[in-house]
Image (tube, rainbow, N blue to C red; front, side, top):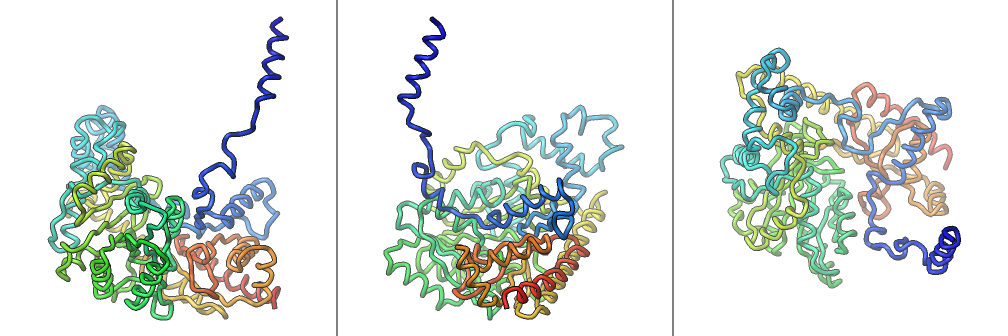
Length: 500
């Protein structure tokens, strides 16, 4: 009888089965259509090759993949700073095993112990395993406010206007979610741009309004181009809500002047656009003639700080820390309607809070060991070693790429990337078209399979029609990056020969 009932149940389930409830056709089409080139087709292929090399080490003419596709410093050999890791370890340890252990001074410097105690006090005795306030731990927000005030020459920063976030990405997502109120809502983004903006807009169902950076003028943006882009979007019925500025640039590496930033501030104020200031590379400025100027500072100096809605983003993932996996960062809201800010707080609250290790790392990024303390000199020496090496690599890679026939690469004044333009043979363009792809991707896959270097096709960031190229980091260590530049040249010669 039991067997008969089970069989009858099987037949009923089969008779009424309609297949899976979620298919490519029934899922969110915005999600299906969004693209994120930094971890797209080329990277997926690179990961597959990595697996092949483990089982068959001689299957390719190289022994490993050199990942230059993403700004992930520790993954390619950058050492973490010692003092922040010591403090973070002490924060995570139970008091009796860490800050209150009688032998703690044998393992940790005194300034790390004292800083960990302060951070634990900020947490109210709950430890790093508990949720914090949805905007982040109050004491850490106060430290961030002090950092911003010092950076910007005393311009006041209210800790209540700060949100500690999981890297800059979460904050960007919150603001774009608030901006995209209908299918006609649009956001101006630079072309080339960092793909989080295009991907997020696609997911939210908003409109991407691109404004072109001028490669021939070190990736500057003219006011004529901004006005053209805005008017064209309005002509298409787009309700432009916000404007994205990435400085220092990703993928382009430029560092904007104070006047250039002031022009953007005036443009946004004139057209009532929320200014999203992506400033995560503010510590990565290599050109001694250039200085990072925040949008907040430029707006204040222009007397327009009260006439502008501004959100600025920073992150522990870049700079000298390179702590991508910690997911630490912050955003500061300036000039927002309090009722709107309350809604953004509500959105942040839906995620409860950002990760506590990331909040702690943000604290340590904005406030290092005090001058004269036990760890100060070693900490500053470690930071200088990393920065000086990045500066050398930035120069080396740009100079090396520009020596390759058919390559043109603007100086990497800041950030972590080079974005060379590459002249492609007509036959390569035709071959890419036949394969249903773009020549950038064809070239990047060819480079990967010939040399093991994983770059991102320039098309993933957007570029002017007819342009081709790729983005590469210069994060791998100096000797490896030197070899990579030589391989770029060898591959390009082979590629030209194949498609001549």
